[in-house]
Length: 330
Image (tube, rainbow, N blue to C red; front, side, top):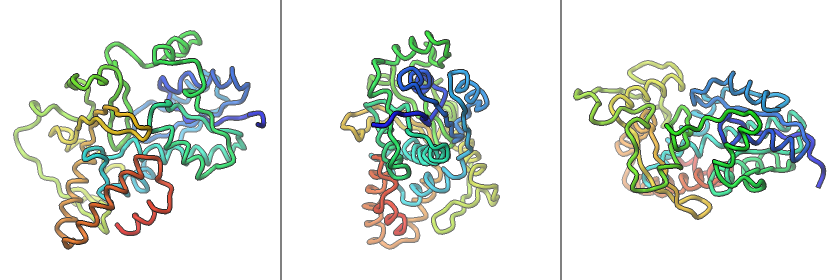
């Protein structure tokens, strides 16, 4: 195997990627180029870039992918009414594809030898990243540190980071991991690994607890064209602004959070708590419109398509002929 001279890393600035930059440099003696995707997660991306450089990266790309993510991934799943295991709106799943695709493009531009990610060896994201790499940069090597290194827990990773002066955002106040983008927030790990542990009201970022939500109803008008949402309350301000607006409306009414124990691609069960107020409103509106306009047999077949679409999106198989064929049907 040829020596790896340059690696492009999918970088978030969180714990799972904070320790990877120095680990790659120490173990592969290579240059590390970081890439951070702006998916509306609310991070200070300038601080993320600075942290990557201070951690040893030679450069850090930051790309605004919110519009592309919504148009080419999240809303395609919406048009298919794709929901995984009755509850999950696939926000993390679809976000990994737009990130990995752009990362592969940067790696080819940089003439890198390898791609790397911070997904663990127990989760779904490793599959989503690596199958996307194979689709767009099949000749590059893939480095998955969580499957190689001696770090065996989040506590080990924290100690590794502290030993190298890298701050990590894990505190006693938030003993679980958070993954955010414009489409949702997800919470997992830590205290949530116990199925009997009820999600704390102060955990949620976008949604108001039901007991604190307004008593008065609020009406929202959503326009669709060919299954694509185009306007909210007769205003067309672009996809990003539209989703932000619906997140606020749904969030203040406590809409769109779910607690799910799901079947991972790797065969394990995992608990995830999700809040997706804007996405939930769009799914509900789209489903009602579909029921209004389609005949019974088409609706029945769409249910089959929706389940298969969700399985493909969840399992790393987005960039496949079948998913593209299902897109043409819906």
